[in-house]
Length: 446
Ligand SMILES: *[C@@H]1O[C@H](CO)[C@@H](O)[C@H](O)[C@H]1NC(C)=O
Ligand SMILES: *[C@@H]1O[C@H](CO)[C@@H](O)[C@H](O)[C@H]1NC(C)=O
Ligand SMILES: *[C@@H]1O[C@H](CO)[C@@H](O)[C@H](O)[C@H]1NC(C)=O
Ligand SMILES: *[C@@H]1O[C@H](CO)[C@@H](O)[C@H](O)[C@H]1NC(C)=O
Ligand SMILES: *[C@@H]1O[C@H](CO)[C@@H](O)[C@H](O)[C@H]1NC(C)=O
Image: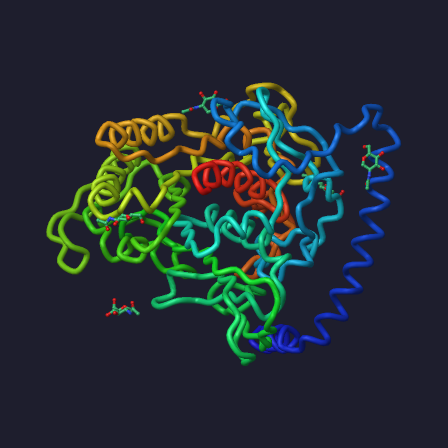
């Protein structure tokens, strides 16, 4: 086991070897994808919609359009926005093609709002408009999924040597930087090849005299926003949730220096009850068992107070991503037995589809908290992506991902049991969340 792991790491270190095998994989995937597309097309009657047009200056024209009400349309002209193998920062959890997924249609759906058209994504323009800015994603692994997506969307146009991925401070903060060139020098680019905690180092040279951006796209692991027993970015499997309901400062002090904050917190509230500790995290005196809904409400209150008193809202704009669907019950879309997202290759086309596992009450609690905050003069835009994720049962990694603990023979014999229907393949659905997010961010940045 140990030997195997070592071997894998050596393989990663050997960049030349990796490049060669990537090429081979690339060709194999290319050939398979071509075949797959051919088969799909042969019985596809509808012509694909016209591609999105580049409409850089027109973000303001989206004012008044409900971007979250719409439908998915197949558009292989505009999507995907990047190739999986072009983005060295995708960890094994989201790299579905590299883990055997052959059908890649999930990458080619665009979100079409009913009332307007989104402008075509342009990485250079976005970087230009984010120049000098710092964006921090704060939350759980779905938020990390979205952060990596944003990095991948932007990094392709940044030359090698003018970007780097690094792990900052006490392991909860990860930072992708597109920075300004200085003199030619050697530095590390930490690429997320395996797990987020065993970042691999690559040497890269800075080139001078090429287009440069001073942009930082960061991720901070805080799945319950406040301190909890799930705070270690990798070792956080626990049977019981313990939440330090009044302790946010140790996390939040890392968020103050941002121009854009993008929060999420939903999945880790999935247990019916959790243990709440009062007082500081070092000196917790009382504890209480409360329902997940009550706990969520308490934490959002602490979070709201912190945001209201510690953030300069003239500088920093804040967003909250609403909960995302986890396609664990095939019965929701008419499948028999204990089917889930495994083997699904098409979105659900039924307008307004809502899976049984998505807790509407949690969404209401978030909405109420944000409304209260707004009444106090702090506007946190809720990114209402819940409905658009409901349709995308086809876009999860299922078994096509890296699993960090070795799967036992019993598990392997029933893939339904270990299929990941929570996260999302990249490229894929999180790219769309980021396109929507960017329409909000860029509307305010002139
Ligand atoms: C979120 O968007 C869906 C789809 O448009 C809509 O039905 C729902 O009411 C929205 N929820 C909120 C809280 O805005
Ligand atoms: C995209 O899809 C259309 C129709 O589904 C097909 O005619 C076309 O060849 C496809 N293009 C690519 C590049 O796969
Ligand atoms: C890391 O954490 C320790 C203990 O919580 C703290 O004393 C130290 O200041 C932290 N380091 C940084 C760079 O934040
Ligand atoms: C808040 O941010 C704005 C814009 O960056 C700045 O002009 C202002 O001085 C800041 N206010 C405080 C109290 O720091
Ligand atoms: C998923 O697809 C594989 C390969 O076609 C097949 O062997 C397996 O039985 C399918 N599993 C389910 C649960 O549909």
